[in-house]
Image 1 (tube, rainbow, N blue to C red):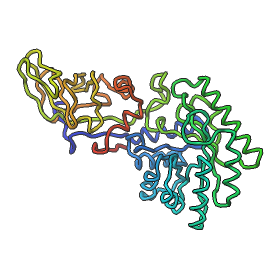
Image 2 (image 1 turned 30 degrees about the vertical axis):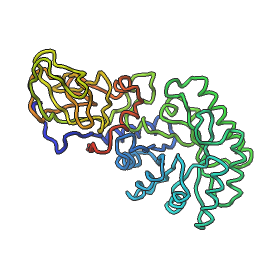
Image 3 (image 1 turned 135 degrees about the vertical axis):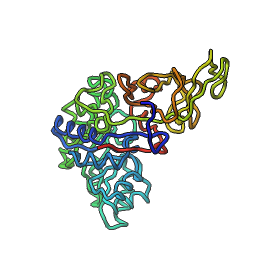
Length: 371
């Protein structure tokens, strides 16, 4: 393992066969249609590659946060039904209508906007009504859902194809009191639409965690991002043995030199060599997504080595057990030999979420795909 040749100083490897496996596993386990959530570059894994793989292996819908993401999906000639969860400007509503992209209906004001733009374009807009069951984000309260659905349908320009909400605590505890309360509120909203004869074809509540832990939350469609790309659905449990991890992050050693005792490393003189030390330079910094937090480690030659001194925007320094040649493989996330640094370890060190870790690996780090 002395030298590893790569065209890049740092890169992310994504195993598409793992994403295919995870999609099939979710579809088979839930026996429910799957919406692959690929927002934020599929949590840093690469939106288009993940979307294509998930669709090829059982997903039938895609979910994104912004219209710009849906635009990239259509530009990649992916015609699968796609729902935008977030806010759209009037100009973006026009683009969504023109490109058969479904939007979120989240308020009465929003219904008016959607109706106006659909009338102006002479084409209906496809919408999923969002209910706020306890998350405190976008959506009407459960008791308002029926009235909003009636307004939308009465306009003749909004095709109500979905009803959905989002669970706030299921990742941490699927049996939390709030989860049960949210499910009751959602069912209340659903029944009010059913009583009015307005039940849409796609009712969906379950994210990755709920898809596996709460069969009652599956309804017509499950929305999964983490479970597809190989991140833990549950924060309270170990990584599921049936799932496969798909992402690893690597670099190659840029430099290695022996520093004398007392020599300072990086900004602020927070680290000084206690004796003669071999210090390596890794071409990864906080501009790539490596957080400036104490306790960072990387893997080199199957061993953990400490990041020393402050992480710079483009580089970090590591304390090496011995001199190593430039080009030696460095692993920031993944396995080397018997040692591994996985995303859940960084969650604890960085006080983040799993998707927050991988989505935080910036776009200047190339994604390399294996099948």
